[in-house]
Structures are given as structure tokens and as C-alpha cells.
Image (cartoon, rainbow, N blue to C red; front, side):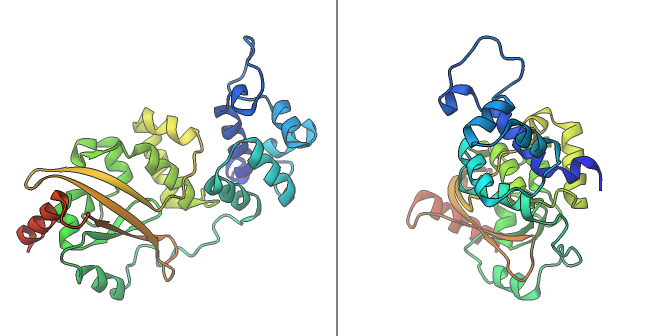
Amino acid sequence: MNDRTANLLGDYLRARREVLRPADVGLPETARRRVPGLRREEVATLAGISVDYYLGLEQGRDRRPSAEILRALAQTLRLDESATTHLFALAHSVPGSRGRAHRHRVSPTLARLIDSWPATPAFVQTQTFLVLAANPLAQALSPVHTPGTNLLRTVFLDPDTFPVEPDPRQDFVACLRGLAGAEVDDPDLAALVGELSMRSESFRRLWARHDVRGRTNGRATIAHPRVGTLTLDLERFLVPSAPGQQLVVYSAEPDSPSHKALRLLAELAD
């Protein structure tokens, strides 16, 4: 384990400190600031801890602060619920704790379930957005839902393949961090982050922010070449029997134009 992987908590604190402005925490803006965001001493003062102790957290000298200190830091850094959960996970979780042997295997039961939904696009993905299984309607909705496709790689390196609004890149990167938690030593994640960091400046910038999002639902507008534009709601469900997998399901408002387009697409895909 290298030093950077070992100091997950310090990396996260530093990144979140650097994206805040003094005005965000009620401090006056000054013209002369040599570092982006808040200074370490400002974070320490606002959190009610010593500057030396906070420095030790960022440098990795203390990797298991108390819950009280973590809550104070979360409040100081303006972390929402998902980001606070991530902060606690980095401080208290052991990297690599989840099993990896069956991460890319979709259970026959789950595969049968999504295939039994002819009018509902559904697919299963890993925590690194690799599509493992998809029903016919999901694949008809977009070729990016074909098993073996990585959605994150597609939206950064080949975005025209998946014309969707709003731009999903920031949400995907934040969800990637939230799903990975403390497991940044995962080989699939390391390979994906390494590739995208080399090939996409946009990914490098977003990954460096350490944004975390635990949102499991959303809305997407997809331009389809055969049935037109569809506005769909999506829900992401964790698969308890397969840690690291998610079931993603699309739906449309009943009797809406998108619902009618989805039914037409289902007929065409049959």
C-alpha cells in the first residue's frame, strides 16, 4: 500500500478545504492568499481543534480521529449527509474490505428479473460503472447499456454515443467516489481512474475535487434516433447479495410523451 492510498482521510480533507472560499464559512475575503480555498489554520480554528492536530490529519499522522472531531470537521467543511458519511468511512473503514471474487457476476435470479420487465429499461452495473447485464429495452434505449461497456469511460471519452442532458459527468464522478468509499485501492477503480486521468482533463479536474454524492435517483433526457427525445426518471438500487453492484431502472411519467415513446421503443425492440 503506497503512502497516498494510506492517507485517504488527509487527501479528502485537503481537497474539500481547497474548494471552499472564506466567504463560504463567514470569513472575510483577503487579496493575498497563496493557497486556494481555506487555510489549514482557518479550518482548525472553525472546527475547534489545534492547528498542529489538523495538520497531522492532513499529513496522515492521525488517521482515526474521534466522532466529535469528524462531526466538527464536516460542519466546518460544509459537508452534506453523503459527504459526511464518506468522511467517517475514510476515517474508520479498512480499504479493500469488500469481496471482489464475484463482483462481475450477476446472479441468475437478478438477470431473470430484469429480463422479465419488457417495458422497463433496467441494467446492472459495478461501482465503477461497468455494465454487467441489461435487458433488451435498456440496450434499445442506448448502446452504452450493452454489457461490457463502461458508462463513465463513455461519457468522458465518447460523449456523442450517449446524448443525455443534463451533463452527467460531475454526477458520475461524485457517485463513483461515494460508491468506492475507502476502497480506492480497488484494481478496477485504479485502472479506470488512471486511464481517464491521462485522457481527460475534465475528469482530472472533477476527480481532484473529491466531491461525493450518494444520490440514488435522478432525471435524464435522452435523444433517441428512432423514437425521439425521452425524459426518464432513474433509480439506483444497491444489490445486497453482490456488494459493489447496482441495479439501475428507468421509468417515465404515465401517459406522458416519453412513456408513449418508451412503449414504442419496447415494441421495436421486441
